[in-house]
Image 1 (cartoon, protein in one colour):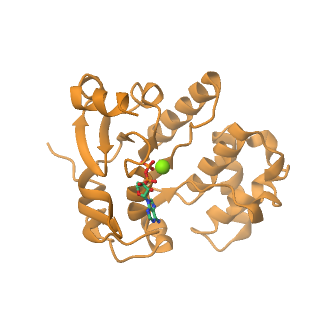
Image 2: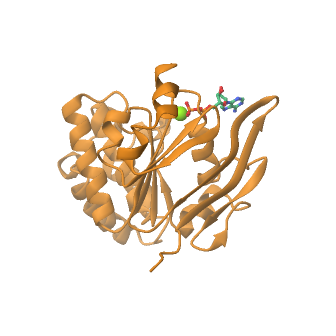
Length: 239
Ligand code: ADP
Ligand code: MG
């Protein structure tokens, strides 16, 4: 039995002038999977993430979601199809309450404020922020802000959640709680593609890992095989 991929990145190139940030990158995510996109700083992870989310058109190549070529679709159009992503909590959102931040996400699926509020309550509870609904986003601790980003993305009811370095800067115990949240997201039936710099955090969590280095896919496969791959070890040691 084969499962059709939810996300397929096909031969993506991203050039910035003479710099090649993504070099013929292909990868896929099937429903129910947690895939880690890892690699040293400057490997091209965030660039690829932006190509997938629709913030940047690739120089060459295509992005497929749910069997459709979405390469030419805007970020909001991709969000409507089910590609959710975390955002940095931007200034304008910081002066809004936690609940209102998540309602903004929920309004992608409904025009009813009442329904959006209900959805926001549900995802905030799920993300462990139920008790923080009424505070302003700028009063949250750094790990709570990460949870808020996840909650807002979940409120858009994604089939695939893209997480860009949501564990960065967390203490080990905060990161463990973050790992539990990502597992809970997957257990809800949402596939996850997570960009993460720290191997120790992602490897025990992901079903598969794709390693980028200097813009290209260096290795991909089961975490246990990837961590033993000599090319991967060398790429990290070279930092
Ligand atoms: P990572 O997220 O893996 O650390 P990035 O995707 O942010 O890597 O960056 C990959 C390379 O592309 C880096 O050399 C970076 O300087 C370069 N880069 C990223 N965005 C731009 C841009 N908008 N213009 C020019 N160069 C960029
Ligand atoms: Mg990055």
